[in-house]
Image 1 (cartoon, rainbow, N blue to C red):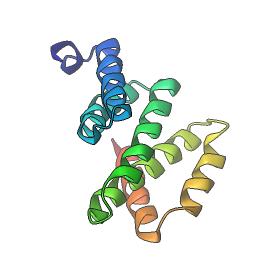
Image 2 (cartoon, rainbow, N blue to C red):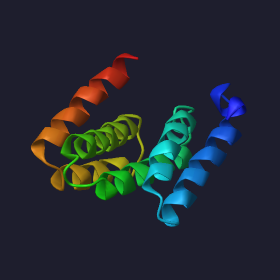
Image 3 (tube, one colour):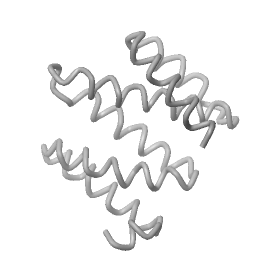
Length: 123
């Protein structure tokens, strides 16, 4: 954890993967914890790391209990923002992914994604 917090990409990847592995074993909290490290790894800009983050966001959004609608919406919006950024950077598949995610998302989630995209662009 210390190495991940200090920016070590391999440690961030390892902790993200552990979070995903815990989810496969039925532990939603493990996935949510792993998202923190997946976000850090994805911030380095690698396509594989961004892909893992997208997968984890989708799993988390689908797995959060329905009564936690705001949390689900935020995760969905984050996925929209990430794919939008990838599309803006020229990822060949991202436009198609973005269209699919937006088509299957509630309008309020798309609005969250747009707001996050603006924040990410200004950072």
